Amino acid sequence: MTRIRLLPPQLVGQIAAGEVVERPASVVKELVENSLDAGARRVDVQVEAGGVGLIRVRDDGIGIAREHLPLALARHATSKIATAEDLLQVRTLGFRGEALASIAAVSRLELISRTAAEPCGWRLALAGGDEIPEPVPVAHPRGTTVTVADLFHSVPARRKFLRSERTEFSHIQHFLERLALSRFDVGFSLRHNQREAWKLPPAPGEDQWSQRVAVVWGKEFVEQALLIEWNHGPLRLWGWLGLPAVARRQGDRQWWYVNGRPVRDKLLLHALRHGYRDVLGGDRQPAALLYLELDPALVDVNAHPAKLEVRFREPRQVRDFIAQSVYRSLGQVRPGPSPPPKPPAPAVSGSSSYPPPAARPQPQVNEALAFYEALHPPPAPAAPAEPAADTGTEAAPPLGYALAHLHGIYILAEAEGGLVIVDAHAAHERIVYEKFKRQLERGEVVRQPLLLPVKLQVGRGEAELAQQHQDLLLSLGLEVDRLGPETLVVRSLPALLGRADAAELVKGVLAELARFEAVTGVETAVRERLATCACHRAVRAGQRLSREEMNALLRELECTERGGQCNHGRPTWVKLDFQTLDRFFHRGR
Image (cartoon, rainbow, N blue to C red; front, side):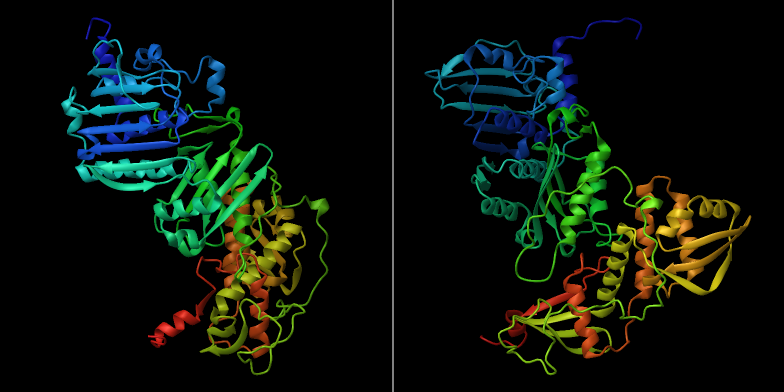
């Protein structure tokens, strides 16, 4: 401990390998990424004993010239960067030039490669950090084959930390699945113990993309997902957004790619979750497969030894762009057979969605709204008094025409192709909430004066918050004055939430103001509070609706953003098609 000495090269390599080679899947990752950086259109992976016994990766890329083969196995030698400036705009998956050297330090490695200009391939073999020998000629097609055998043979202690063969192989398969969904233009195959595990041909078009996603994630996800594309300045977001129906209890189906690189980034996960606000319950996680593309100069991919995390130059812009894109995409989902149109590019702004006080129009005083005064049927043909299967030449609306209100809870509606069942409370809850949000975003919240102002006692801090944020509260439809050091008076409420408990609503909003200093945090918390009020405001179970009220509810739900779920993430309607109904009664068997 008292002498400072230089470490031997072999030990240096083994220490460095600890950062790069964690398990067999780490080796596969480095080798396959090298293949993709070499322009491969076909990558075949073969492993034995979960990758501990053998890993072989073969590609049809550009290959490595004979004179460069020894350098490929040297530490910190790469063709992907040359200057410090190159690190600021990395366009390749790998760039550090240490993967092959680190792998060779803990295994027996063989490298064979051939370029299009050479008559044969060239082979190098290295075991545990030996001196790099001269290449020898061998027969080989254009491309590269890397074979890694006896992983960790030189550091047997590392093998003790590996899991079972099945577990290690599952890590390899999981990584290849992730990479296969980042490069649809490349074909992949995987063999384990001489048996083919899976094979994915190249997917050049949009239909083939969905087929590949279905192989990896299942058909249910593809059938219950939106294929989206949004652009704003240097940012582009595209991919598949799972509808709330395929949400999960775990966040394991949130795969992100930044410029084609699989990453796990807290900012991206937070932005995704924020985009699903209002449509998922607190314990549900969205399923999404998303690709973020931007100028490489705007993202630092050198923030993590395994290159799994990134650092954005403008994190707030990226977060807002993603959250708004996801939120608006989900808001465009409507009932009906046709998918929603491609969304226009969103306007991304770093400012609050609340307009400044001077820009807010002063609403006129309205009388209290009745439960269904807010439901305005569009000028579509009215439903017949006794709806029949044949409704004439007019196409039936997506949610059909109401037949009955079952037990005062569910609306049964006859729709084209089957039966629609609607939870009246959940549907009205979403309608009221979306109406209030639209008023809020436009700065046009209609206030309803209270017949008798409500006094409430609060803490001195809460009273100061109410006085400080009086304009914000007014924009929410809450007219609150401070009467004393610890006394407030509520003079008006939002008209759409007119039946809410004034004291409870104001105290709840003040509590959120105390928790959050950032405007975005306040907005999110206030929306959650308003969602609860909308729930209380909605029609209750057991409240009977007339045929006209039910049809008005259906028509309103059809044109309401995020109308497929209530504010707590539960579905508002389901459709049973004739095929499903026939199965119930064994028809056609």
